[in-house]
Image (cartoon, rainbow, N blue to C red; front, side, top):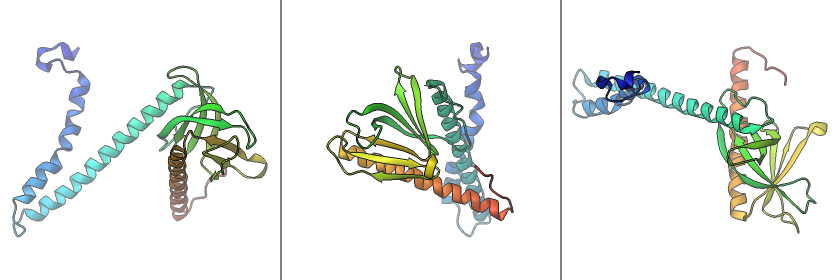
Length: 219
């Protein structure tokens, strides 16, 4: 193995493979300093500025690629942890938030059930804990056609909100509650943000398809 070679100083192959990317990410700092000490009327000023703009684009793409890779790895890990669910891997899907919430079967339920909820960029997954890092799938709610309504406190249900997905006979309803009003407000704000971002992304994708003369695939 390369790490056993004294010339490698105990480093593994991965440490060397990442070096070129790490070096690219340092170039903006170098170019920024060069621009700082280059007069604006110097022949090299504009080429340096152009190079600085280009390398920033490259670094942004690298960072975005790394973010997506880390998000994909987390989804793959989550898929292994949840029993009874199909593949979770999907384009641009990533984990946004997770936590323990109370689940009510209906607005008249007196005894809530504990659910560990995963909020993905396009999907909400309700599970039951089966261990420290093991979960059993109970319900999935796609964000498409999903609405959120904050519920007024009742005798049994407090600090809660209702998610409704789908239309008419295919509606899926889910009431989730929190321990405090502050916690509920935070969840509501995050979920509404997720739904808004999802709808914005789908609208952008649809518009791009229309510009290309393509028709969306019926679900």
